[in-house]
Image 1 (cartoon, one colour):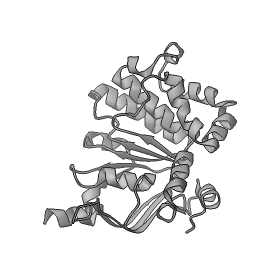
Image 2: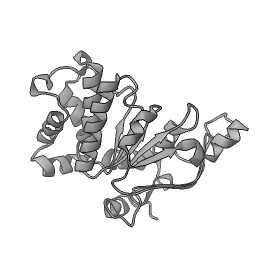
Image 3: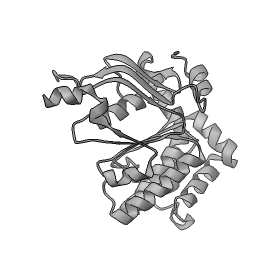
Image 4: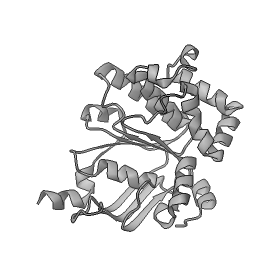
Length: 251
């Protein structure tokens, strides 16, 4: 595997021979902690696969997503996305790679409250020239790509200029999804994105998200405590069975 961002990542996108996500002997411990939070011998996700991940609090779900996103780096072992070894990159290059290839939906959405809906969605294109170029190629302009996503996510044009702090929780969640999806990132990471929604809104949002990921052939890693959502996914992973550190902590 290579740490070259342009060659490996672009060649790996959509190539069934190259896993979208691959961890091998990945070990991570938080500073000051004696026990590792993650010890994963092997974990592989195919391009376009939609994976539901669950497990009790403290089993390492958010830590695993942080490794895949390149927000944190393992103490040892390898973490690859589209064939690029994130653990071989410095922090600045991981930031560039994340901006170009990974869409993130956080539990608290992390929207900029004083910006409009449209401006929040376009932030991903402001931080990544590659995603801006993809959005422009897809829809003629980044703004047109954002508007098309917002419409598909049931956010009407009458809302687009409204500051996001005037929206309902469900509307803010869909804005966060549009921001993550614009510019066709190859990997989408969703960390407990439905935890603040009621059952009807939760299912509706999940249908929209899965449909949008399929439309752009994005790989999805979706973490939730709510196992009722697992039926909508082709692959279900119980993290304590994958993470050897979970078993060690329980002993």
